[in-house]
Image (tube, rainbow, N blue to C red; front, side, top):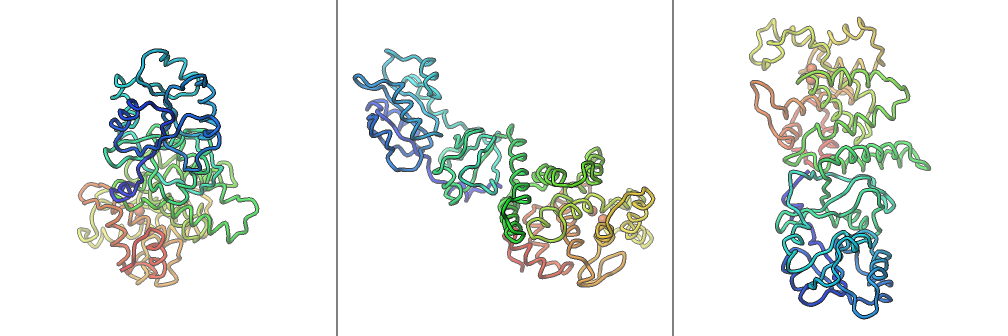
Length: 438
Ligand SMILES: [Fe+2]
Ligand SMILES: [Fe+2]
């Protein structure tokens, strides 16, 4: 979800300087060359009216002259600009009381030129500490319970865009909704809150009051589309989506202790093979939600269980490429979708016929070159195709012994040329992921 191009498009941040003296103003501009400044006179009546411009990203306030009270000024600024961090900045030590200032709503206070380097650090360079994320289903009253940051392209600095717990201002949410701000970052330690928020946004759409089924479906597709917007960029992985999908399915499931949840706990206790089914399951579920195909919980469950039949296939055989298998090994391997059905029956796991069918069909192919039943065309259910596609993409993008891993983009481009799936389905998947079928 990271792209150099998107970063280039990011508008510079802008700051207002309210009553900042000439020397301090010049030093501020020197310290923050990537920030666009606008000067505003320190006039409380004018301040209260606002200047009609967009909400600034930073506010610098100078020392008031004459009888104007700084506390009053601070309150005035806050009443107009609710979000932006506000800093006090001056060049005279006299009356400079950092603690008193922070009590009055200032995020920090700087004495220039002494604090010039500290000012520069207002925008900190810790790229490993932030992850770019899509925000879905935003409305102007959305409250995010995590901090968001934007990235300054000029010198790779991050700066806070919104604070956890406060609603986005109209101006800020408008900039996001209009895609004027293209990439939003969340501190890595707050990613759990981000996943939680995203799950809740999906749940809101699912249960959306006053929405008709068609509207709901369209909103869900739009949300998943933006969720997947960074899917094919260099540093995105399928794992990024696991937490969101898992929580969404568990919390929207009508049964409290669903088979999905139990199987997931079991899957998470294992190694590679388990992460394969967990990833394939969440990817298939996202495709299902984004395309409006099938019941997402059935597809997710089938994704978790699709390879359960490999339990009866020798490990060496499992790890071989098809071209390296002997005839006997190939036959044994090709039994695993059917063995899965036997295992499920033996263990008395209760699954719908549709879930069983998806598991049985996960290696079938549109051109009838699949196994075990060599079904053809429309007999290869769309739901089964989603799981098969997720299975294939997951496998291609993971590092495993004896094979090269490819990026998601390469795997999806290859998928677009495949004869293994319904061309109409590939076309809408290409559309969802922003890749043209070739
Ligand atoms: Fe399989
Ligand atoms: Fe698989």
